Length: 443
Image 1 (cartoon, rainbow, N blue to C red):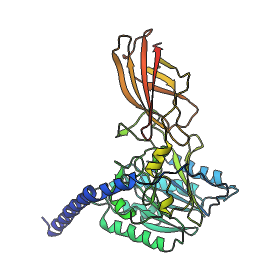
Image 2: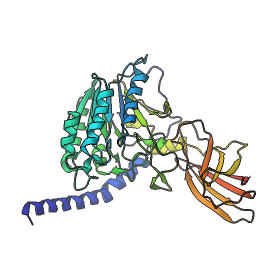
Image 3: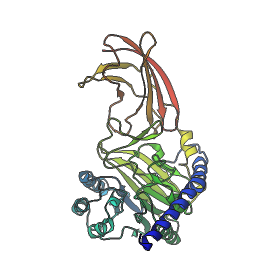
Image 4: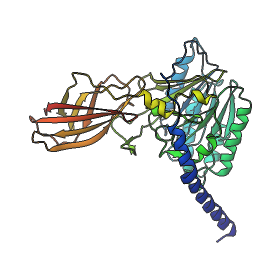
């Protein structure tokens, strides 16, 4: 075997061992301590009426060749803010990777053409690599040819430093090299030196481990080592496809991190297991609207392009003051509550056009800004025999006027004309729950 290759394999092996050790014994325990900490407040922040942005940035992620959604995001952003009375216009768009599925050159070209057709010449447009772009060995060449800037770059947007980090592909597409992480650390450090109280924005594809919803699996723990040294940054990421309208998409520990949802399809977890694709997960089209003033205040909103509606609104008074961080896990959990069913909640069961039984009942309601994440359902017949026992993810990620929960339970589970007892447990994002028992007759 070539001596150079042997040396490289040795270096990779050492790097992997060191990386695994640091993750298991240093990064993960310390991150858990950070996540579970924080102070509670009497109420969550609300954006002051006199908040006046000095910059507006739109971020989106994981479009996976759905370039029509990208075009819609750009066009909608201009429509929303061209005539905004407080602060008109859009200063920059940031694409957070996985605009492709296999990293093919044609995927780059079609995505870049969409941006050229819709992003105005005066608007900054920055992109980064996602793991799907790393599937092709020519990822760097394709990137520069199509976007005209380096994959790792720092861009000044109206006096705000925006660090875009792609990183280099490591031993696998899931890891970053130490060289690239050093670049990230140095870039943030330099940006902080000239921030003068303003936030430093960081954009990259995977979530830092153990932060926002989806980050326990779709993540990179190496990022925590860098980010935990830099209070005052606001980090934006994707990769997980977990919905941004889950309140856990926002978290403050030593810094602020935001999960930006997805522009193609959603993914969720069921009983802590990711990779779940319930009804309504496809399509998805969420974008993140970022505004900030010169004094360290930041407003972050989520916008759903399919329903043309805002769905979350976070306000940070001063990103540099960790003592005032309100979006810590403890405080977010403290403001959540058990879902509430209406007094006249009723259940029905019917067969859909595919011959499957569907159980339907009035949705439980969560506090403003919170969600019912899932329903645990048990159905028993008149003899007390359990015929259905399952957990169903609530479709909170679909923004519409439907106020019923509808779950398919198979074609042979019920018998028409028979009465059943339905036990429902509605579970919130932070695991509060309410139980309800209902009677229904299968139609």
